[in-house]
Image 1 (spheres, rainbow, N blue to C red):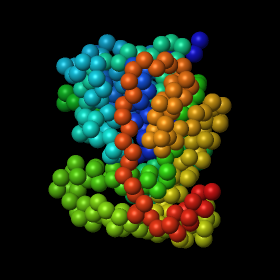
Image 2: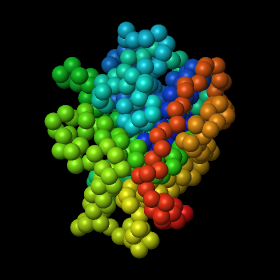
Image 3: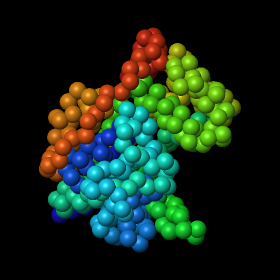
Length: 330
């Protein structure tokens, strides 16, 4: 049968990954999985618990079998992924860093007939890095979709991180989440704000340079674009002319290219794909939840988390800039 088969949750960072995963857990009352074992609750042995016993390189259960909450809540979902920057859902208690786990009640493993929703951000997504670090080929991107890391007990009593990749035949379908590119870019900026605030003194210079408002965002974009345009930059596959009037063009390029490569990776593996638009959570949460559960072969037994529509970011881009970027992204 297809028991334990993986259904990728493919999402560009800050596009609703955490909420989608949370929605499935709450609606189905079953746990989900992730490529990134450091953000999952460890099993009894202190290791990230793989979904498939034969694949210790992942993916990993967020709530492993026998996970009893380690003194945490009573079946609640205090656990919440730490890297998503969905600032409209900050009421969830989330770990303060990638290695510190949220305490959580237990969620049962999905039935063997269902697909296991599994977070992957694939490749080509780094922020403030030279293009050689985010310009991917279809093959390198697919390899990243299958890659992650697991937590193992470290020498100092903490947890150490071990990278690995799993076999493509574990994956049977994909949920591809898409968010408005302009909102996604602003949300990425807000996530960077959050990361630098966590650093205290070390993050101060960055926060002074980029205030948390449209002017700070535009300066951040300009610096990002300069990194892409400068020495060691690239000509956007010959698209430089078409991108001239676009602010945050390195971010828009990453976004457009990421979604193209994600569709390509799912196609290469022959996966059925459900496309979910982040904005649908605001307009039809119940219908979107039902479509997700139906695609995953899960029953709706729980109550849905509330979704607060994000802030209005319309003043972060002018109408002309939006038109130029939309035209470029086709």
